Length: 127
Image 1: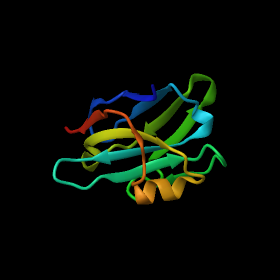
Image 2 (image 1 turned 30 degrees about the vertical axis):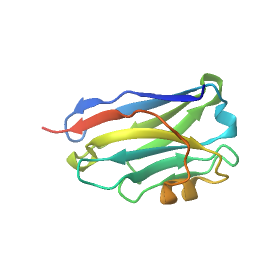
Image 3 (image 1 turned 135 degrees about the vertical axis):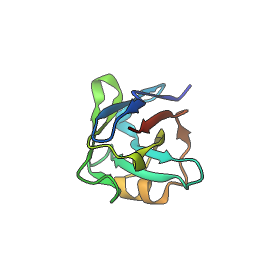
Image 4 (image 1 turned 45 degrees about the vertical axis):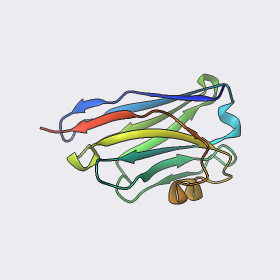
């Protein structure tokens, strides 16, 4: 059974940091492009960052560029999202997703045709 499990969410003050983890089971990280998406109440889902399994290329949305970093550990079958300089606008439920995209940007921009999703982890940025 293919599963993605997110962890690392929580509450943090503005300017703080969190690291989210997405652990895959039932399939290899090497075969899938992984993306982090987020959705706040009343807002559309946004592709935050994606990393390609084929090329290793990465994509970041303009809203997080320079503050967030995505990485993967193939041995642990885990993808990380390091979030720094957090802002109240980053408050959302963050979802990990996996699909066989060749490149990172299409996955994050389209956000569709994705078959595998985690259940999400809540990030709250507030003073």
